[in-house]
Image (cartoon, rainbow, N blue to C red; front, side):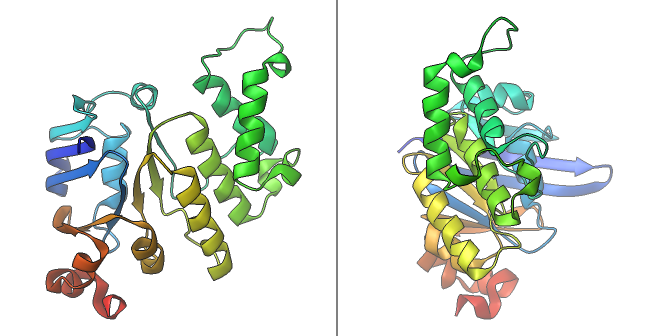
Length: 249
């Protein structure tokens, strides 16, 4: 099976501080892969490196066997990778419909042109309607995104992330701050929307990780200490000692 993402011997330093060290990671095409680790392990930095918001000090990052490290985020996105952020990142003054339509417009190849009426683009309208239904926000389509509940905003952000048509999705703590029932709905949404895509997810909720991921990698002090199936990670003594503790029992 080919790799959607491959990180080769990546280092990232900030001054004298080495945040990422000798990082090697492979995420297979079509796999749901979770990246876990204690606070400060370097998970968000890893996401920033993959998505182009940071440049590695050394090493290489590949997307489908082509080097992307050093490219700006928009070029990486155009190559089929999209990500969400820890902090909800939507246009709060725009409606749910408008937020999704912006992402769909780009994915369908439309650019800004003042003479075009975007309401007359059937492929954009149909795709936006479909995503609204997928994220269960059809009834909220005309509500400004800033007035949605927190869980609804996270669902909208996931919808925007996949609306661009990317087949490699990075989700950074998508269920953080949610209740148990909201988390269950979010996991169901993620599973459905990433079907047939590659998913790399950072998540602290171990029930989400073990219930969603095909493979799990454990990052500690900027270095992967273990990778494997949920059962392998659950029973790995190094992982229990470094991170999972009683949660692995």
